[in-house]
Length: 185
Image (cartoon, rainbow, N blue to C red; front, side, top):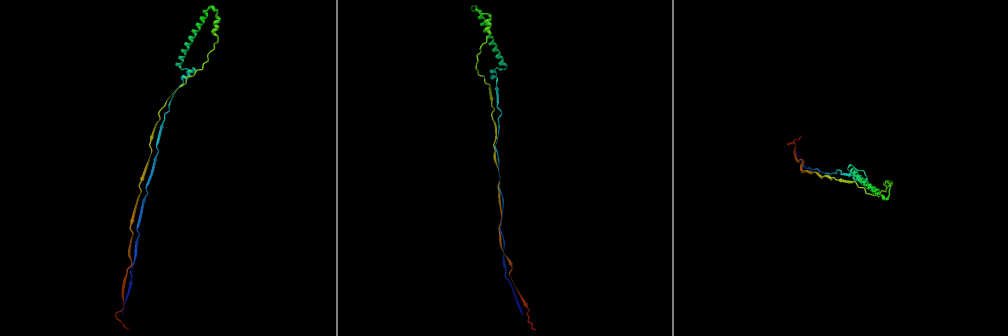
């Protein structure tokens, strides 16, 4: 007897999933600010001061060569005038015989102490001349420098996939088992 054996296997499907991929590359921006300060250069040469003390010194009696020469001339003229005046006075006194003045009295009067007048005088001030020099300056303007590198964003995207796959193929097997002829024993 022949038997028919049937084996059946159901198919099984599965899902193969490849996930999507999203990659983001970020290059950050580079931003730099540099500040250069302004510079100012000032140059002030020294002022020239010329102080002439000669008028002050001359009023105190300390003279230079030219002033001393002038003073000597003035003193000589004043002394000469005073001497001439004194001789005139003495001559006039001797000329008046009726007064009966002796030579001794004339000499005594000429040599008597005389009172001098005291005077308060102002002294000449020193002569001061100032030559100013102008202020020189130079300015360099500062500034701000900006260095910038723009950032970049780059993305890579790969779509995901979902596929249906056969994990176990279906099949049907048939086998004939046994003999076609019956034998009786």
